[in-house]
Structures are given as C-alpha cells and as structure tokens.
Length: 200
Image (cartoon, rainbow, N blue to C red; front, side, top):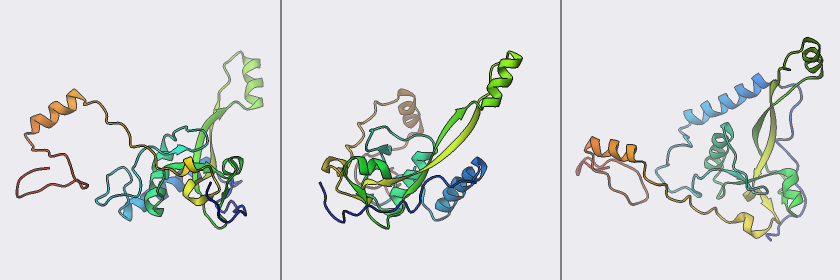
C-alpha cells in the first residue's frame, strides 16, 4: 500500500448539485468538450508525444467495469489534461472501502449515469387507463477520482493497465488501405506523413 497523508480529502467537486436540470448537465458537458477542442485537446486522437498512459478505456478500479458513452471522453480528457498515469477511477466512498483515501484538496471529475424511472402518478395513470407506464429518462451526476489522486490503496490498483490486445485485422479496412496505394510503415512512437519518401 502507498502511505501518505492518511486524512481523507473532501469531495471538492462533490456530489450531485441539487437544482441542476438534465439539460444544464448536457450543456455543461458539451461546453467542457468544446473548451478542450479549442485548447487542442482531442482525446480520441493519438498525441504526437508519448502519453503517460495508454488511451485504453477508463474503468472503475473497484468493480473493473469499463465506463461507457460520454464518460469515456470526459475521463480521457481528464487523463490528458492532468497527466494521470492510469485509466483507473474510484468514487470517494470506493476509495475508503478499499482502505485508501482521496488526498486532501484533490478535485474529482464529474461523470454521469443515465437511467429511467416510472413516477408513481404515471403508474397510477397507466393502471387506470390500461396502458404501459411511460418511463422518464434522467441523468445522475457523480464524482470520480483517478487512483493517482488517492493514497493507501492496494498496490495493484496503481499499476498501469495492460496494453489492449492487438485487434484482428478487418478485411474491409485492409482492402481499403491497399486500394489507396499508400505506403504505410508501422513502428516508432509517432504517427506522421513523410513527404520525402511519400510514406505514412
């Protein structure tokens, strides 16, 4: 275990803010992505330099479940912007349950969980009318912290994730690449086009 300041940090970015609507949450996420794009941060494009961690899919370090949807972009952006060496994330309570703590003063990253529920009055209306009840979609925000922001967690949670296994070649993609007549060379740490040799 990594030992450091044993005091538990506050939630800084905190739990769900009451009064914020789903629409404002969508707008907040959209504004964040636009700001990152304007700064030149494009998390789904391989950076020119070597990143501190591979851009594998972010996952919850406690459950090993991979995040999905917009949360992937949000967490990739946080890894790139803040230089985290890991794609492993935890909620404040998960860090405590694993015997660790979030360092005091650390700020978490807000992600979302989409779900649906059927209000009580809608169930009653559906029973009265003999219809199917209509579920109402909602977004719940919560805060996660990269394991690099935590102390005293089990050591294996700090390890950099294994690189993703190489995918099988997709015949249609290979045929398209071959049809371009371009000369692709695999290797090195950077992706670029070399005009002198006309190679990619």
